[in-house]
Image (cartoon, rainbow, N blue to C red; front, top):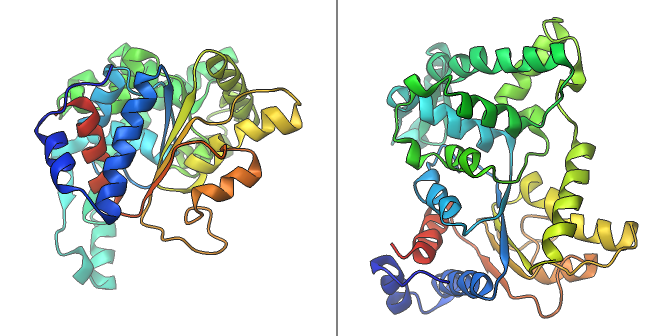
Length: 326
């Protein structure tokens, strides 16, 4: 059942009456209705939502069973862990729009990797995590027990190998919440993340012998197909997409794969919402209106569809807070 509306929800109900504001409210109401009708929700994370600290609301959404699975980029997977162990060393640059190329070079020399107005410290975050995750990779390599990207990080969190390094309250880490729930996770294209680059370097330099220590994207799609078949047989599965890119494109095509390529009959996604600042445009997957997905066998004519053309770092915490009754 939906949580009772809190101050944030009441504010949205009273003030958000038109345009993108109304779309936000409609999407939040639709999310609640979907769950109240017994549905499940699949959430996708693109962009830099972990560095934007979406975990402040996303972790509680996971704990309260408002989310049943997540598909995210490798960057979002690792950056929640980076923030967990190195938050005090992050550097915020409010005047990032005024930086010159020389200013950017100085940040590089300081080993500060900039994401908009926030710099991730290489030594305190990335290299600290690399040392611990390399041990997990090496063990899997020796024992020939390949895993998905998220499984390695879940393993590290559960082992408490980095717990003494935590610099934020772990209740605000969505990755910790996901590990505790053993939430189904899908991380396509993990290779282009920082840890993916680290792993590649270890393979090239033969510190890791088997490149297949990580299960690949086809394995991942096969596991998603099985997840969707099982869960859609019990309840309507909704799709809540934050941003665009591979995090959204990879999972949403699992349904036409099952129905059209395998010839099996599963229900289409039962709710759809995308938050994106990519405005509607020709030839842009992130800017495609939901109705286009009907032609691909992803959404039905009657599927509740919402698109909020705005900054996901603003919109997603508001919708989650609405749903949580904050």
